[in-house]
Amino acid sequence: MVEFQFEKQLLPAITLCLPSLIQDTSSYAFTTEFSVGYRSIDVLVTSLPFQNHTIEESVPGIFARLTLADLAVLERIYTLKKVTKKRLKAELYIDSDEVISNYLTRLLRMELIQAVLRSYCVTDWSSLLPNELVSIELKLTDWRNAIKQAAYNSKFSDKSFIALPHSTAAENQALFSSTRDANIGVISVIEDDDVSIASPALIRRRNRFQNLQKLRVLRDMAVKTEKWEFAEVLQH
Picture 1: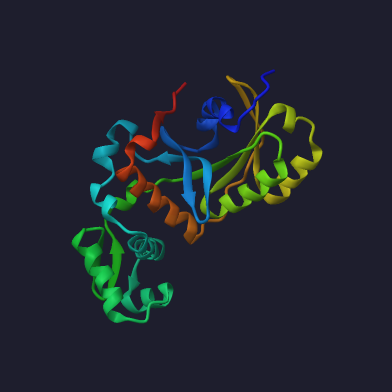
Picture 2: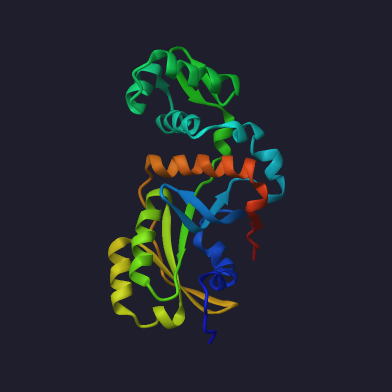
């Protein structure tokens, strides 16, 4: 059994189990150190509704120009399906008609939203939004801290896991009790090429943070394609 010295040494094995962490997809992508809030997710994997070799054609380049504020407005329109300017102001705590109109005008110009009578809805790009986000926190021994960080990650993902060496995870009843209570999965790394899902993670109820992160993922793919590694699930 390998004696891991650094957390990054877990990564080659982790990549082997990524297809089993996501559901109903033929393509997926992952990146490391994806920033959320005050910290970074060690590994973020997402299912893709398009083939990985068409990333540049599939993700609109216009996403690279979006600010976080743009994404926040876009998330509300996407999540609420159809929304009026008045509702948007209330949802985003914006008092000024001019400010919200500027955002809407910008998104309309980019053809990311469309006006329908007095309401707004998103355009066809929404079919490109990732179906699922899975976060993974890597740790060698400090599994309690890993659970805290994975719990934070779960605000931004559909499922959250911690990954530990087998020597840390094996027969650790306190660990598995804590992760079950927190609805966090456990990945056990045995060797560089040997890994198992010791405990699954259930899909969490969707929230606005998750949808915002999916929009951020699209923007990140448009801006930093080289940071993402794309793959296809082998069909048996």
